[in-house]
Length: 253
Image (cartoon, rainbow, N blue to C red):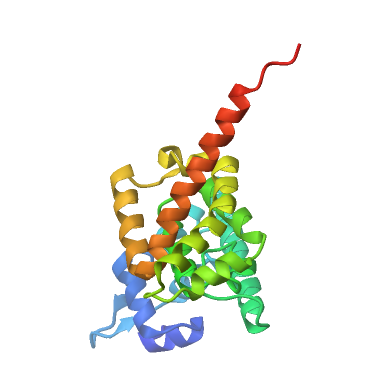
């Protein structure tokens, strides 16, 4: 007695196309054909199919089925590698579920990199877009520093900068830049790599600089860009002045 392709697929809980795919990949031997030309599968084929399906249910990729040992001679090393991959997948799915739960409860947003969910809701759309771009350009350490900067939460200066109209006049821009500069100076002092990011980039320095510049110009309006440039200049002046004052002090006796 034997089974047709459709019958053995049904017995194994799979499909005809899957059985044919296993033939093409060499996982399942072709059965003999009867005099009428139809395939005739035997018990050995059914057992082989069930073993393959068992390993597939365990998450073993098709190209590793033979390496793991479908005929009972399992490779411990191969199984450990698969177990490690499964562990990583489970962790990724758990993180994704946690992020989705945070989004469903209104405490997070979807357009920020992993790890920024808790601060994303307090950021402007432009800031979130820029951080998303940064995640492709800077190292994990740099992104961790950036997250630390944002965890303090938005202040009034940041809110005013976000709300700044494109046609804001000169006095408004200068006043906002002067209020923004001290916090920038503090950030530049605490995170020196911001002034020399070469050691924190994942792409070339040229690609990083071009991408950041183009992104900032695209995401912020002309008045906001002007304030950022002015505030950065004032912040560096404050840092230089602070350093000079420290150097001018007489050393202790």
